[in-house]
Image 1 (cartoon, rainbow, N blue to C red):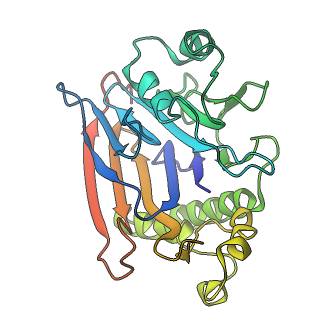
Image 2: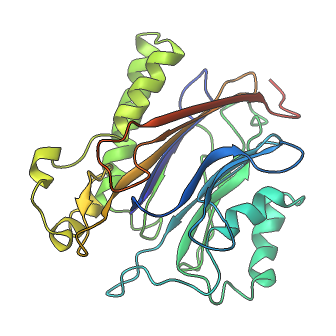
Length: 290
């Protein structure tokens, strides 16, 4: 039950994005790296599907795409014939502007037939023409007929496994805490390192606290997922695997167009004692106008 939080409120970072991927710990995944021959597309890979898609990615041209699954009523999360993880890759590889791509991708995929429910935040990171943050991004979903444009001017948005217009409690919690964190960072003139530390705290705090998750069955914990930004490890019904927040990503875009992509992989197996893996990438966006 993933979540993304995005904001354009910080005067020194016109785009900040936080992402938690909640998944079974044994699901095979390749850590984020540059995947294409030209070394321009940065994303992790979901190895569990032969399509080798992703849930989050950026490229040096400034394109960003973050996908969350849609929780279907009473049916859990059915597997589609076509991997949802292909959708972000299609955008990152496209040469079309985001608004045109958003109109055409439905036609190219037969209105996403045979694709499980999803919502996608996507767009090009460009300095706004009025210098107030960035140009707006878009949200596309095959479970909603509405097309949303977000981050118009200074704003904060969140998206999880429900419709954008009907956010889960965790989205309200996350956006509020993120805004307070940004406010404190500006007021107290935090360093970038301190800002990153506190942003990870935003997406690492469970509701309720971790001790109250211990001993819960998966079905008991499942009902709590919509309320918690972070999901502590929960033993699956099979008894040999765990489910929870396993990968966290922070994207920072400085006002000079330099992007930092920080990935923290908490779990890659049911071994709860493994040491988290942290990787960091930095590069200048092509064509960014300060």
